[in-house]
Length: 110
Image 1 (cartoon, rainbow, N blue to C red):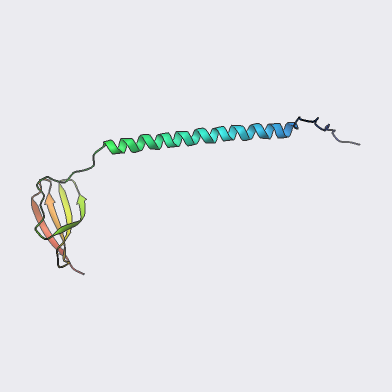
Image 2: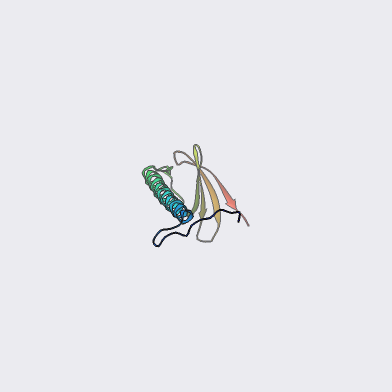
């Protein structure tokens, strides 16, 4: 016979291959657990930091004509565009400067 002989493990002992596999599974489980803790921690830090920063703000003197409601707002450098809709359903794009002074109005037709 030409082959290697591996004796049967005694009662209560595990073969070396199984012991090595068990160790690998334990290391991978620990690595995955640590990675999840790091990702959750980084997401928490990032989300808390987002809550502290304030986004762009509308000019305080920006007023819309009575009967019109804002549908969308776009902030640019030195200007604000507001899409409005009146009671009849007519939509307009109103362009204001950074101080809230009206610049131009464009009606949206369909």
